[in-house]
Amino acid sequence: KKLFSSWTAVLLKSPSLTLVRKLFLFIFIGGLMLGIVYTTFFSNFFIVNRILVETSHAAATKSSVASFLEQMRGKNILFINTDTLEQEIETKLKNHVLAARVKKSYPHGLTAKIDEYPPVLNFTIISPEKTQKIIINEIGLAMQENAEQKDLPRLSVQLNKPLPQQGI
Image (cartoon, rainbow, N blue to C red):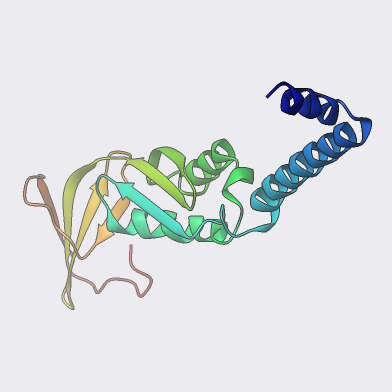
């Protein structure tokens, strides 16, 4: 037993084995670093392929935000700046969006939560050719056309002339 232990002690302290251990450690750490770099920058592991938009009221706002976020599809989620996205959504859709929050949902998704200006009025325009129903939001802009919410107050306007072609 003593012979075996002294032989292993000599072998473990030999300069060639120390060099092999150092070389193995260098190759292992280098391979690990290359794997991390490849996974982060070049693989499809962090590519956005799922976009979820949650809104409180209008489907039109949901589709507008979804189409805006579609430009992020195929990009690396690690390099997406959610603060910039939130500001762009709030600026671009300022007449409908009160606040936007975009979160990364690792490894493949973006989730946007949109707070809209709440609806306050059902506005109906009755003209000789047709009746148009519009939901008006808190700042006085049309949220949805050809829609009505039963719990909101109604305002109807009767016109004697046809509506202009481009609408109101």
